[in-house]
Image: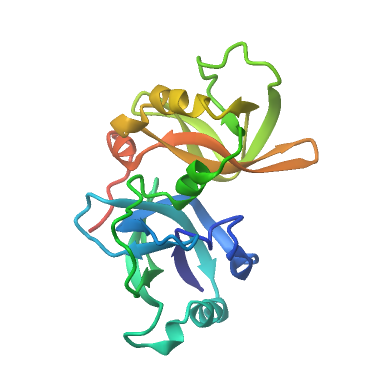
Length: 243
């Protein structure tokens, strides 16, 4: 088995995720160093930058050699030259409990690099570009912005537990766990207030997306917030990763 880090349309519920439909997701909240750019073609370009100041978020999968081969063909890696759309390399990938070396696809064609994705998350960029009037938010820590909000529904998200890290309430990824929270439909103008509340611009929390189950209905890619890698590193319990 091999490890693969995905950051764009191969992510869960992405348009190209079917290739990884039967692959095991090891971590939903993973990140690596690098920079994302918007190509204007409904998929991002990942550029390898190892200065540590730019972070890209994604998911880590356990894949077979056959799945890697299928992806190589789909992403035109088999051209193996200057005209190849992608090049597959290995890079260190980080999670809350440490780090691993995994495969990653680097964009190899020229594109317009004038449009970086500053927050490093393609799903959040895609979310920002949507024109819906409302969005779903998963509140696992009783956000004080929404105490009397109507139409709250109790829901559950798999593979997470609520923890306290560095003095902050945090959604910690634990396999086969279940976290309870409230699912709330909010108008789009609430997004800016949530970003301020979760100190997004101070790099304390970052937006992410998870699936929420209510009775037999699955709500996909629901917005919530988790601590950034910088905030996690402040905790003495956060394990040091090797370089």
